[in-house]
Length: 121
Image: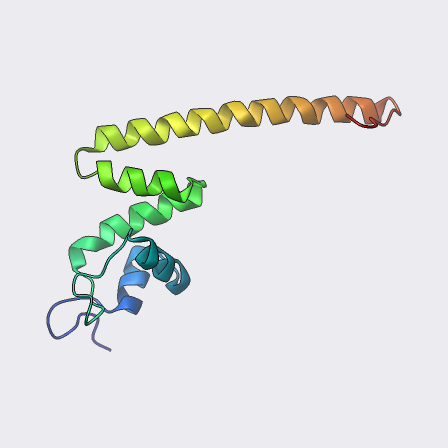
């Protein structure tokens, strides 16, 4: 199988494989405009788009919401520091939310250990 098309582009399947994306994820990112084929009529991607696909996949695996992924994808072209700052801010908020949830879980564990059941809490 030839990895690159006659015109030097990557097929959808090859692009998804190199970018670490499932075909379903690639179709979703195509529809949302995050990853647009280099030549739409032929559905070929430029080899230079693979890094963008990898970054998008990593952000989604972190749980970054699609709207923030789109924003980060836009600002990364302006500089990595801005993208890193935005994702870092989101990550700090997630950590704070997790600390809050952890406190609620500990409260439940203590109540169960004492034999109490929280009703209507």
